[in-house]
Length: 195
Image (cartoon, rainbow, N blue to C red; front, top):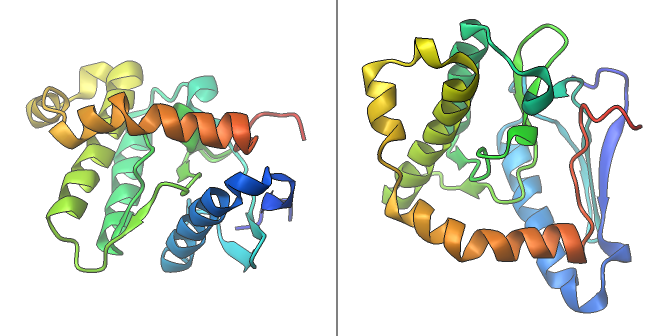
């Protein structure tokens, strides 16, 4: 799934010396998740991971906020993709961000940015809560672009965010965004058209 053969490289050598341990940790989480998800269509392929860099395949597509998918099939396929991630014990943890969802040139869903992913082979209680939040975030996007097709069950899920999610949004997420965007200067640019 290399498309044009382009790759995405995260290189932490340009990070501030005191933030490199954080950068390594986030890079390690992404590498672990991509290794576990190897072979799933719609997920980047891990190419190389060393101490200071990670290279993964580039996925062609537009970010959700630009492509604005209104086809119910997109959301059905996205739910199927999410189930594949969860079956392998990966909770993405950052699917509220529309840029992490791509619409490929063939109209299929793809997911990028696995820095916050949790790999839990045993799929215990915390994993199940986080996997449910992954689904709830997908349903929020479905509500935005394809609201008439929400089921009663989906509306119930949307109405009940996990307490863990509320705590994260108020405490951890602002810190994460500050570190990755401001300090490390990271941004996933699939579909941005500026390459």
